[in-house]
Length: 353
Image (cartoon, rainbow, N blue to C red; front, top):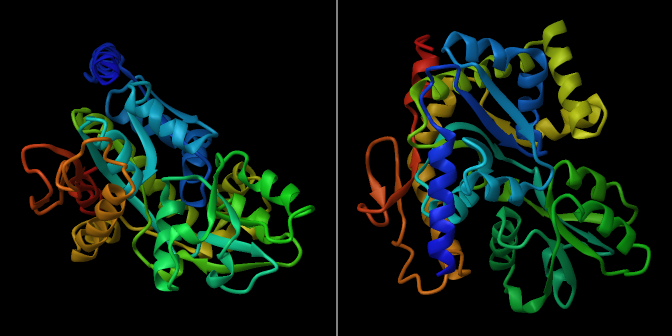
């Protein structure tokens, strides 16, 4: 009954949102703090978004910061936003599993050291045994943790997870280190940057050990109009050109992002070094079209099903279909709810947006 009521609520809210770009339509896109998503603050502040919205006849595309990452995805899923920044795993396990047909519109980057496990008074993943570890449970941090444990002969039964929101995780870990000599945390930047600065801590595992598996994207509702998809894609890759330019414009862009992330320009540049940004639309499209992505999503859906993220009673990991740019599907072809689409990135690369 609860699921039925949620479905009705999602339908009614979505119905009220409207997706026609005619008549001065307005759209809302949610994002949360993460190195690879800070460009959205720049896109909003600089007027880039307003310019692209106007180009495609859209009255307004509002870029909204939501400080709690998981909450931002929940809000997207229940119809409060037309699009949201999220990882490939969370796109599958929250909106797609929740019945919202969603499309990965922009592949922004993959984490190449931006997600990590940090220990106080420890030197390896094996030192996690019998510890308590703060983590946003069932997030990509959880996925990273299970990959690290498996690669080091441990399982989740060897430690105790303490579920903590991303908004609080750095502060709680830092205060915990004052009384617990075995404090541990698994998180992403910018909180990761803060916890790594704590004395006697060691980063024992990071996402560079599993390159290309934690992918940071912009997801939109599949039935969103092409005008919105073109405007968002155009705005994103204009920002990519600007922030990768070694000139005044590039510095201004990075300054805004660093301030938004709560650090210095030098710190933000340091975070970018562990973020494999796709600065060119063609590179992003090629990654979306690669066999690497298919292999990764097989890992991800197996983890998700094994950890109960498909919900009670889910018969198998094939419950939800995942479609790739070449039209191939893993999972149920009659229940495709997550789509990787390179079309608009290819259009941008060809100068058609």
